[in-house]
Length: 441
Image 1 (cartoon, helix red, strand yellow):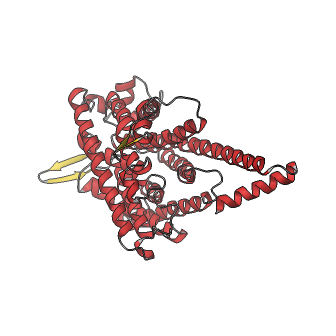
Image 2: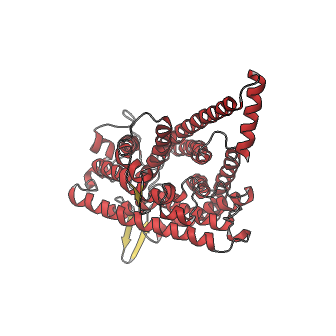
Image 3: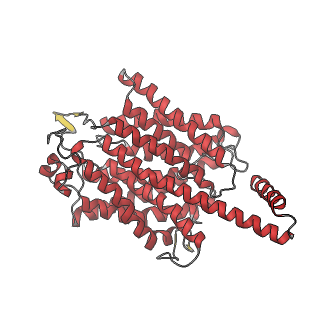
């Protein structure tokens, strides 16, 4: 209905501007204008999502040590650059090619031709693929071989992400069941989060992270070197998320983009406030990094339900995500003893799963009402099935991938290189040349 109103308004404008035209000419003009708006909107949205690569890099650099900053820049550069090439060659075909049994696509390898709409859609999707790949970078920071990371990025962009993406967005079996993930809480973020989990398990913790005294294991904080840089990264990510979520309306004439922008903003805000309050209670002071991750948790949580929830629902989803991320980071670190320097597993894996389930609780959409709006457990069950299925696929495939890389290439740098820092060990360069702002210990 809203698209129709926009079309009518454009039709009237053309009548006033150009006089009386034949009905067919008017209809054609309106269609051309709508197509142009869609093209512009999706390319702008894709550019915003691409800019999120800088945000991820800044967050990761800020929350880790200075001696690894250059290595992190290289990883975030190359997981997009190498990943884009392989998503063009293989990934797009597996995700959006002709459906094979609801499991994967199989056509349009090596995207080519003269179809501008195809190129527009590929451009919008490749930046999502890059986001899924780059999430892992923070979790495996400060101890991963650069060659191993390149291999991982290529396989995730070419195979792992596209196959589960096809199930939901490409006409596969989950989508046909009615599974709803508007912009990628599961398709993008949980995929990255569960891959990050498998990467950290395969690598083990950084040197000095856990200290064993008898049967007691103590987690030692390894502070990042630049909180202002991390906060800049979070603001960049929040800014880019408007392309991520509002862009997923897929049309420049779909006025619900405003609804999506509002729910996105409210969830992120509630997530930051929730994490701040819980960290204040837990640690006696409002924690900066937890509050920053709370904003990201709210953004991840609202990504699936953003178009089908009310503002109040968005606030509750974001608030719960902000609380959840604090407890999840603490549990993963201090109970499971999994070393995730930036909290990627919690922000993207755990809160991605929460946001996906939230559709089945808070959705107000006709035909897909959530449990709290009289829809029963049907949609919630479908959402839960999707969370489990994608989680199983990614943990299995990423687990095999990291095992193979460790077996044939090696996954982790040696202890001497880790202590020296990966800038010098892996790239023979320093991010802060001439500034003695770190030690090798």
